[in-house]
Each structure stands twice: as structure tokens, then as C-alpha cells.
Image (tube, rainbow, N blue to C red):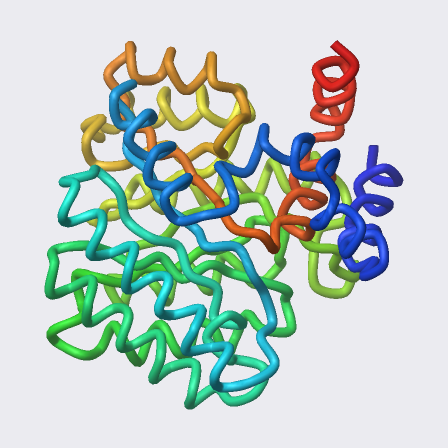
Length: 307
């Protein structure tokens, strides 16, 4: 399983395969299970559909590692349009943003400025920005940016961050984020990391995810547990029951197109569920990481494609 995961993560960086897939009809067709579409309107339609099923949404305009300031501003403009559209359509939705889209690898100061502008827009329309986490080499700078933006009084309620359970450092990071009052989405992690910085085996990651989940559920803030693993979900539900954590104090987050049956069941059981809805033409790296996270998705896609 670890070998297959590594293979898909390696393929996610293959630029030739990426160009072929993103520009082929077959590639777009295959990706449609996990990607809501290529346009903003596609994403909004998907969000409306998810809302009708009783679930909230976080919208992600796919794209990573822009190469210029103009590209970063164009990426941010999509999020400004999303925030206005969410407000106009009264959707139960927020947005997820990668700092590399905002120019982080060109300038941390530029990324902070652009992300701050998006977050101020979210604050003005009563919305929320979740800053996604990327490779471990960017963890500290991402946390630094989020912490500084959160320290602005007008942004305090409008920004949160993602923590990845496979990193050794994540327990200390969550302790600091809780001390700062910053809302967290906890996920397992989907990048290829060296054993020096990340747990190399699934059972170790699972154990750390459970530990970090309990830390978040014990806190007074609203956090999100992002997993499709029923054992992790059942463990969180049991911990919440035993410790009197109300179901509206946290939410489960799941990916668009993955375990729809489980999403609906959680809603029926009275839990808040938020679906991560990605869209855009630069879908290939995201798609390959989804296959790496859950190789069973490969068989599912193959069956449906040939059907």
C-alpha cells in the first residue's frame, strides 16, 4: 500500500503526464468523480447540490505554485468572485486557499498580502478562509502567515489552517494554534515526505490522528476532522459523547466524490458534514494525490470508466 501511495505521489509531479491528462477528454472524464468541473459556475452548481443534501461546502480553485505576481493576483481574483457568489446565492460554503497560489514561493510577504485581502473580503461578507497546508518545507511559513493574519482583530473569526497528522511536529503545532485560538482542519496528509519529518506507516499516522483529534475536540473552538476512515470517525464520535462535546461543536470534512454513503449517514445521525469541492483546469496534482490517499479509488474509477 505504501509503495502504491508513493507511486501516485511521484506521478503527481510528472509534467508530461499532467499536460496530457489536463488537455484530454478522457482525462477530464476520469477526473470528474473527484473534481466538480473546470469553471466557477460548475463549482457553484456542485455546491448547491451538496447543500441540498444537508451538507456544507468548502470550495477550492485548483492550482499550485504560481510563477509571478500577476498569476497570484489572478488566482486570488477567482476567490473574490467565489466569495461574492456564495453571498449572492446564500450558499452554506466557505473557501480553501493554498498560499503557493498566492505567490508564497516567490515572496512570503506577497502571499500574506494577497491572502490577507481575500480574508478581509471573507470577513466583510461573513465568510471564512481555510489556508490549506502543503509540503512540510512550507509548514512553518504557512503557520507564520496564518498566525499574523489571525492576530488582526478584523480577521480573527475569518481564518483557519490545516494540520497534517503524518508530521511529527503536528502535536506541538496544534498546541500553539489552540493557545492562539486558531481553528484547525485536521487531515492525515497527502504529500510524499521523508521519514525524518513524517510517520512512514499508516498505523502510526492513524494513531497520531486520533491523539490530535482528541486535542481539538477538547478545545473550546470549532474544528474540523477531515477523514473517510470510519474507525477514525467512530472514535471521534465516541470521544465526543463521553466528554459531552455537542455535535455542533465540530464537523467532519470529506472529499467531493468520496464515500458519499458515509457523508449522508453522518448527516442522518445529526453530525455536521462539510464537503471539499475542488474545481478548475489544473486538476491533475490534486487528482493523483486522491488516488495516493486511497488506492481503492483506482479500482472504483476503472470499473466506472469501462462501464
